[in-house]
Length: 287
Image (cartoon, rainbow, N blue to C red; front, side, top):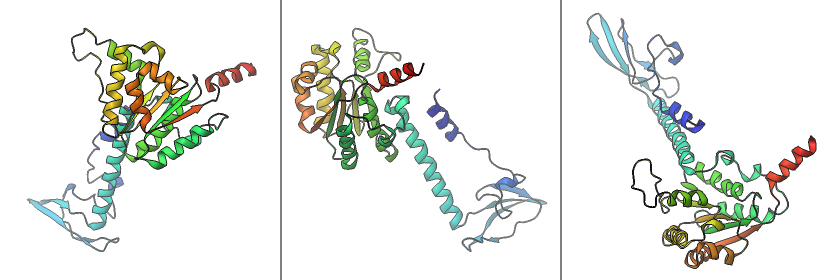
């Protein structure tokens, strides 16, 4: 269970109902509205100091004792509704993050958190424009060598959109193709890899598209299905790829899929060196 699972479980756990002796839950000597309490004295109506409304009680006789339930006033109702709305929003945001497929190391990273190294200026500008233009952003293709931050920059887009309850999914394409290949000739059961639906998320990020290992006809057919299902419904795609040119991508993915992908796309080439290698060399130099 990861941290998001733990947080969701904590938020969705029902809180213990306070008793009349739980003074920490009391407000002006009263229990929260809608809670039942047993008392030896018939409760009197109470004027709320905030909204001026009278706190009424639903009272039931238990012989020598009383069972009472206080009815919330306007200010309490407003506070409760706002708290419930915030609670639902927090859970929804966490669920969106949970199903997004964004790598854990890139969750929450925004563009301002990423060092503006040489070779990324055009990409940073394109990402700002992409987010500002949403939902009319079209497709964005981030091209460059291994390790120069393509995936991290794509995640910056997701991390801006998801808190706004925009459904984003990131698919690692080599992993996707390996999962698909594992189903060939295998009877489907609960343990079998399941093909996700490409036309469900508001934004689909295809990470590491154009891997040389997958320039097969069946891979091209699969990529066509994914890209065409988005294209025909005018749904945007963000792509990261090691292919340096449109022709290079077409050679791997196929002409039909590439043609649809490029139709409403912005191609941005990142020329920065590998940040992973740079961090490694910096550590090695300090030893």
